[in-house]
Image 1 (tube, rainbow, N blue to C red):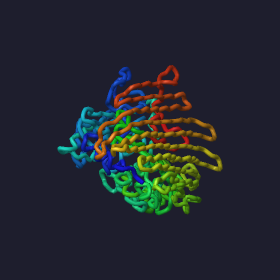
Image 2: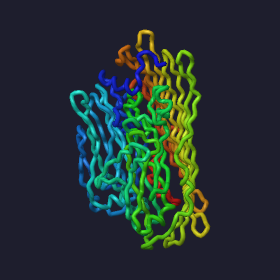
Image 3: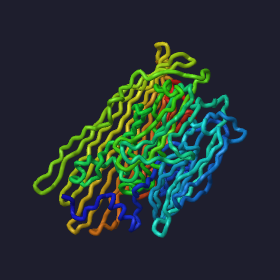
Length: 601
């Protein structure tokens, strides 16, 4: 039985808004992956502003050309903020690197977390969420995204827009402001032009850019595309962001248990499925982002959750389909979210490398074992209910799929056989303790992906790219009710983002890298018998972001906070000379590699 005065935590935090505690609204999201722009010599200890450990995008030598997209724009409604784009004059047409920089802030007061997206010609340039303010703190934050792989898009003038839907009235007073610019680093001897895709094709139908809502597993982000006839390699960058009833999908349970344990239904397995002409073509795991108003907003002040302010796309290798995509016919490329339960916001961009010495590439898919493997998890439980109605036990959700997709393309270099060999896994245990005084739910979840992309010419393996990813999540939400009906809600959260990758050429490892980003937060809310928030205590958090690679690159930063302010900050720990050292062509922020067997610079 539920404790007296029990409130579902989503209701608790929304009710808390009335008393000045900002919470996460359905359909609104909040963020992470921000970076303070303060000089490195200035310690953030004592600051209540957004402070995270994430690295910024490394830069090549030289002075960049800058294109300002917009500056000091206020977001106080749901209307788009349009801008016109033109490539930088006198900066060439091929660059060693292109970086998006954006700065955001929100005035002190009361406001939900909000989804933020930037677009150009239908293509997503940035996807993230905003930090919630408080009555005394007006947070500001800085985000960056490596857009080098989108250079083909940026060589053409076009129209773009910024979207941050925001309600400003007498109750929700926080006004969001933003500025964004693109930095183009000219190619040089020390920093040659990037080997970027030759075409960038958006899947959305909006010519300027917007997300598509996927309310059910059968809902699709889909587009019929007539592509160039000389595609050599193809990749799909995918974003799927949980919204509305799906915002807390990672805590939900299968429908048959929802009423018993007082949780959201629909299950807790989510995964993006990619198809070409209706045939399964790949899988994109979904990261369990927690927005800055999620569960308990104090958990994410001043350090947000993993990637909250700056989502990273998941890159799906579609190269085995290169020959098929080049056949001159229109092809339907689609994304849906398995388990979607109202709803996910989705966008995707197709990145194409073209054969410069052939007008036509032919080929076929020869093997696809993802066909016939539907994303259907196995469900189990150990729940028991005693004679007093007390509930204990766990609900488990498990799914693992291994698949191989192989195809060939007849190119100007000869026949190239491409294979994607991938294993995707999902495991979740929801443990419940429900009695007269306690409602406790512990979520332990792990999403994994282990993939190898391989190209073969003349029977010889010419290139191999391997990537291993883990998304661990632990949530412990414990509500304890006192005899007078007042209650406390204690939350402990752990998020992780782990990534190992390696590039090989003719069996020789040219480059490898390892990334780890963890955020640990806890806080306790106190409510009176009427559900009014009276206080919070024991807020503390730590974030550790570590990266190292086979070239000697090293980055580590640790941030600690207590009672809403930065309490510790250290950078370079464990690196040679106790200093961070990153090569300009690497991806320490976790942005996707191009998947090519040869290094992507």
